Image 1 (cartoon, rainbow, N blue to C red):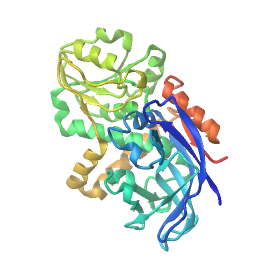
Image 2: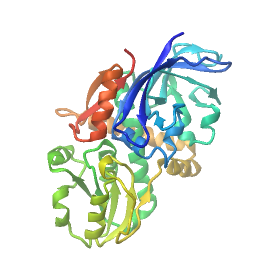
Image 3: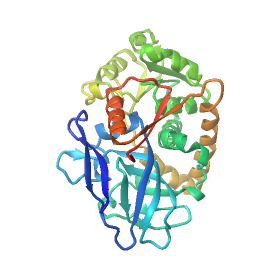
Length: 364
């Protein structure tokens, strides 16, 4: 019997990780076994882990061990064993995977576009994360941009939905958008969309070491180092879009920006400084949950209408991030269990070159 290698993360202490070898799960009637070929590891996955209990991320791929979880990742897999007549061996799939060498899925509602995982433990989880797309019919898919799709597609869709949500709410009457962790991919994706809106100033907040990188992107009207936050005009009507999750930074923003109209909590890239809202001046931070905006727009436009808008914007993004002479993203590959474990730990600690995008595989 073959074995599966899985990266486990301690749910209450993300610094604790270990590699587990376990027997491969059997493929039952209607199931498929998928080899997890490659996946992106970004600050977004650290957010999944940091908020795994609150937002049910630990439940997608239960570890079977108390206190230990499997962090979900976005990427590509290949069907290597099939007991489902509609999904042949060799089929290339894009979707939500465990950090493991393989996984057994139970396809439901199979179509030319893809399917949902019908496993019982995923029935109550948000359907956006349960969808698997067939690369051959995916309008986003291009074989030569698989890495960028794994790295940027889920982040950019979140970025696009944040921009859409804010526009849908007339930006809460604000004219200035403040984005923390401005060097993160979800933040600059959001900034790119916001910068196309008229009447808005898009301000990136970042560490001094990442300020030059953020300015080079060209999607921020202004970039301000965290240390210079208090140089911002306080009474300008503003929205704070918090990708950092830092308690200290949130307190400073709320205390200084008297014109704050809305505080949108998105990510947790600063995992060492997470916490609740506490007693803050101004509006109470509201967690942004991308699937809720997807549900709204599916109702407004239909799934096809939403997808057409996303594909068009995705093509624009690819043009921006790959433009010479300096692409926004340079891909690094990390192969094998030890390399993937080390990468997760490095991302958890923060820092690193914001221009790098990391693709990993647990395959040896």
